[in-house]
View: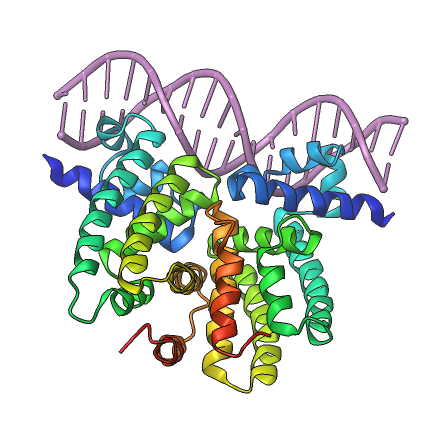
Length: 172
Length: 172
DNA sequence: GTCTATACTTCGATAGAC
DNA sequence: GTCTATCGAAGTATAGAC
């Protein structure tokens, strides 16, 4: 049954998002997924395995996101900005969870995020035909992302950024 | 003697930067500051007190940074961008340490960062006379900051951003 | 102001029943 | 595939000597 497995990964991500790395203990994950700790450790023999599986799932979601970004009707830039601010989606939750892991200076978390960012950058650079502009847009997305993960998000920021990117011809 | 106190705060910050929240245990802080755990707990009766003191010191450094930003010869925008990427300064270390705390969903860490950001934003908005542009510059700084805290920084990013901001007239 | 020794809790992980 | 019981290590904090 893969249902329990995914429920455990969901619980792990949710705890990372809400309380950070210290809050995402095996006890807490098991309790949230309504499984005993023994049950958890059957699916993931160690906490490292839990982290790895979570990041693997994120990579899958990331591939789908990049594909959607390429064909988005509103264009890749606006799609990228919106998903950088969108809070609540499963992908967003997985992304924030990975950031918590990366903040513990875990190389796997950092690598997973780096690969995702590489995928987004390629699409942005190809669409804009301008590496400096693409990198700037990516940094703005990182900024949204940081603000989200830290609870610093400002409601009007997205519209402000759109205004400025229109001036640069990066957005319709 | 305030020397030991500051050495303990330095050690706490350094451990947060290098290894994240889980690595910054009282044992590790005491060892790094070359003090016994009992010695540490004399200065900071609980870990919460250690966090509070660290954030208080950050606020002091933050006031000085905003003041320097106002009078920087290169202008506040370039000053802000540079300090957002500058790794290694005491202020930068304190800032990253606060981000680690904020990532554990600690309200004090989030509030300290929010206040700092408010200070920077006011200077940017006043200098640029354009809230949308100021918010965009701030997000770019947040992006640099996120990349630094996660080990995702890209060496050419600062020059790329300068290129784009010159197009916008936000930089000489 | 700093140390050692120790109490108490929580964490990650193992063993074995069902 | 899931549970209970338990272990050893590590975490925070206290007590009391110096």
